[in-house]
Image 1 (cartoon, one colour):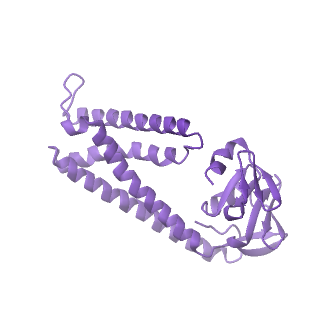
Image 2: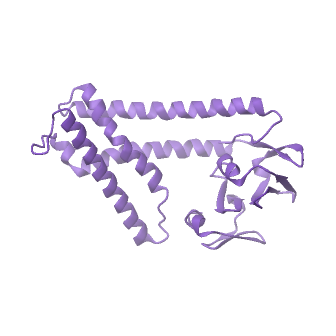
Image 3: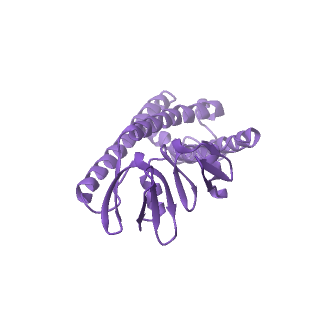
Length: 253
């Protein structure tokens, strides 16, 4: 998702950006709303009223958020370590879900500390993990699909360089370099455009399917990377450093 960085036709572009963001948020809300209704329908068959079933179904959401933001951080470069981290995440979300289910059922009088009267299905960890996977996987596929569609569209970023308004296609950007006080946009044609837009905003603006941050000072175009390691990447004859913080992201390239 791209947001114009500065000026020019910024007001119009800003409104387009806000519209796209709003639509994406609405789609996300719609997706999770449908998921909650479907899950509540399943839980209704276990003896809950529909209202109570919706309340119980919402207890799966915190675990789903953990899955969404944790799984993407796991690297399988070291397969044994990656599997170990995945196992820990699964155990954590399972324990969290059981804790929330216990609390909500106790609140509704279904279970107490000494009388765990849960529906037997909810006591089955395989069922819990299946529900979490069944909800998380489609959302992950949908998110990737939307990102890929977004990446295929021609995008333009707008910013100020040396007091001039610049409109630049993202396909023309080779890499971004931060020099603390200013940022340099290196283009495919060999131009170096100076701007005071911080690199953190460029990172938030550029599509992460097209660009990847490899260092506190560098964001590079993915398709131009000819070789990569945990310590450096090559863009043809140009070699740029990879910092430890971003090494895991580079390993996934």
